[in-house]
Image (cartoon, rainbow, N blue to C red; front, side, top):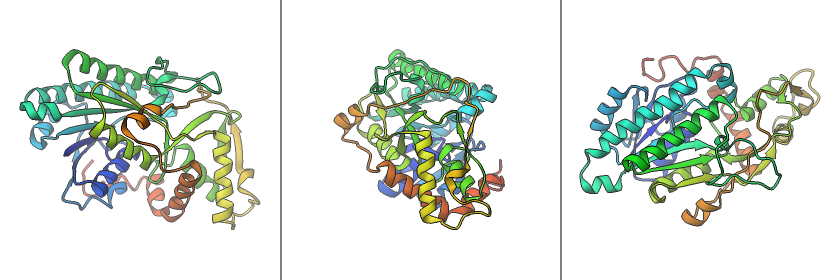
Length: 354
């Protein structure tokens, strides 16, 4: 297949691109605007492949999307381009509405136009996969409750509301126009190449530098943690084997409180880096509880039974194995995250003028 991936320079997108190039015979066209979270340095391992191509473009630019689809002729579109940081959406929701809602609309219309022009066989085989989040479901009250594919939407933040809106658009384009679309809703991802402002990399890097480890409120918010490379495998399963019009929840089967995650990272750092920054006797003493963010959901938990039963996917990593791999990666790839933090990763973006 020729797969067009939007947002392929982001955290999940780059993991997906690496997975496809390294584990299949498919080719990838990566379309990315390269906002602050887009990092082509996350794709250096595959950028030299003759099956990989990068196109610097904004999915909100409908005219350019039409040109890209006509020129590249993809068999599949996997749509991951999105603004995704909850705190940023609270501070400035406009960009989230633009990218996540209007960007998805623009891509759907370009895809519909392209799909309508395909031959009969190509039309039957074409797929549009929209990658979303479990945050569209809102908050879980009971400790045993789980998000299923039929859970009602109840988003809490501007970010999750924008993703909910984009999910609704995709379903409407499937039902109204017959576009062969699928949707996935995933739990919290973690792993290598994660942008340093996110919880797990932030805790690792701050601890190494002897800085406070800020935890919202009491830290008892529960998240289901999904190793990003497991997620990439799941997405490929869905787009190649999933049923048209179906939604698949993708979870890691790893429900942990935020405070547990932070303390576990501290334990691993005690093992890996026993020589601490000056004045620090233990990493866990760096934990600092800070004011909770507005509208903070207490618990997310995914029921991933459907994707397991229908497509045979289950996560390969436990939280313990995945977080160990992640901490080791950050310890061994200091140059990558330092370039992100000081902004030098933006530069010319490996030859791409931005």
